[in-house]
Length: 130
Image (cartoon, rainbow, N blue to C red; front, side, top):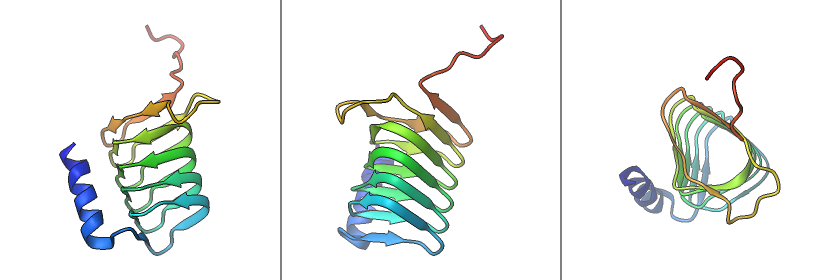
């Protein structure tokens, strides 16, 4: 929670309600609600981001309903998420994919993912693993 508080403070002080986009980043069909800071070489498509989101270099966010008050560290990938993500921290090179179709804004997700971790939603059962 301290990281998220520090992120909100830093965004308020450094960019106010603005959106800052790093060099080489591509944004397609997105709604961005400041303050939001997007690093270099990021790919964002078909999503709503903000307020209070910091996305570091090389991150990818595609087909995500909404992400707010969250931190995405370098090379994070969030793909095909049909839930409202908030108050979350995604470690370096973490990967969150999938989702539950036809959900409303009340269906929320809070994630704290470590570096190099993967979560697939809905959870799938591995064959041969008990």
